[in-house]
Length: 221
Image 1 (cartoon, one colour):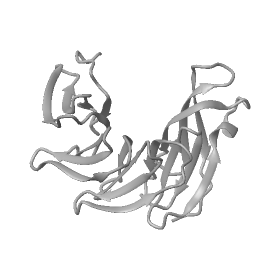
Image 2: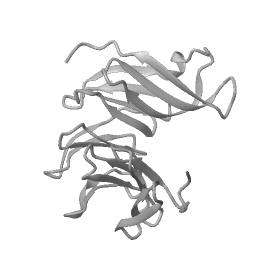
Image 3: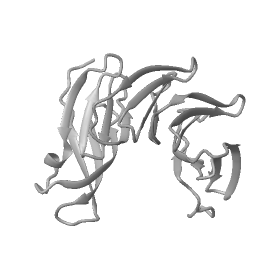
Image 4: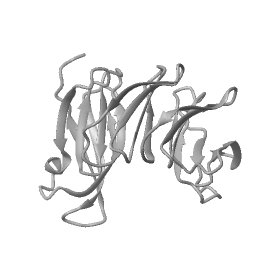
């Protein structure tokens, strides 16, 4: 099934899998329901190219990241609310379970956490050598994993900013030659014991991607 509109710069499924939220270069936030094929415009932000989208667990909120660096939260009742900004385009967003916390990351190599309800920036995590391309909360919400264009994985306590784990993922590939491109995503397993990363551009066959899965040997929290 293919969306009839091709001007999509960011997308995310709702948790029940019934719809896809999509953003456009013109700043339009739309919902596409594959079954039935309907497309509805939810919000328009002139001159704001949408570069990242995340949907809350109950689909009541949509987080929006823009090329201008702005981070916003949208709902049908209150419209769009500004939380703050990165110094460069936003690449990825992630809600923390059922809490009021949202994480954002971008081209400025920073990860920011926000309380979307109080509209406050909780913390700013630095240290990635290149743009951050993926973030993921562990199931307990006590750690955040992040990956970047330098093929580096970091796991941190977002409250204290403590770096608990750091690894160049190129050394984890089962193909020894490793990843020579960029990491595009990271995800925790449902039990919080394993982490998967994905990347593109392998030394042994350029242009193909790879997925690495490993056990996260971290103390209990």
